[in-house]
Image (tube, rainbow, N blue to C red; front, side, top):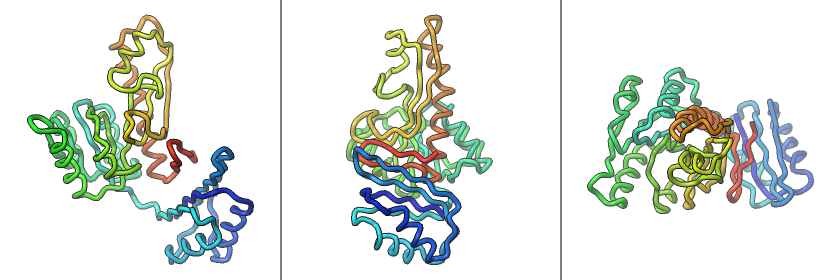
Length: 275
């Protein structure tokens, strides 16, 4: 069982939490904590033995913690996820393989694409694929259809695996901190479209990828994971794009593992990640 706690910092929080667990005869398997001194915020992630009454345990913890506390108690079931795609296959293929061999840490409910390009690979892995086309309709109607399809499965998270559409604030608001995107640059550098072209024209010596939660600000959401590789003058923009796909796949896989294991806490526009 995993417990994730976030609240205002004050003296004695660790002692108060461990005291409650001791009274409940619950063994602590692992415990990680962090204090953000600038924001005066306390973060903790614990793995403990299973408790027979989660609601009672949560109440007892809240009684000894600051009033602004948020507590999540999770028995580590597989998360339910939906994958959104367009035409690029590399991130989706990696997720499908992990799902097939049950190493994803989640269960794919379905894949939704605004093109049918990736339907065949989903069918090969026996994962339902739904086409929700954006063509010939307004963005508002497209997103409405997308929301309806997503909500049918009530997922814990929605993964944008190279879903090349900018989502409206109204859409994002329906899934707060539940949308995970992979962006093909080392943010905050080269946000928006064509980052490899931007990187090539700038003559950078490093390229990267960033997995982040989606917010109203394009490519500005809380960062979950990042990675970079060196490049040089001999690479074209196309070469950079090819090399970057390997990083995108790896970074997204790492970010999903961290999120699915409840290792990521968000406050304002930053994350605390207990790796």
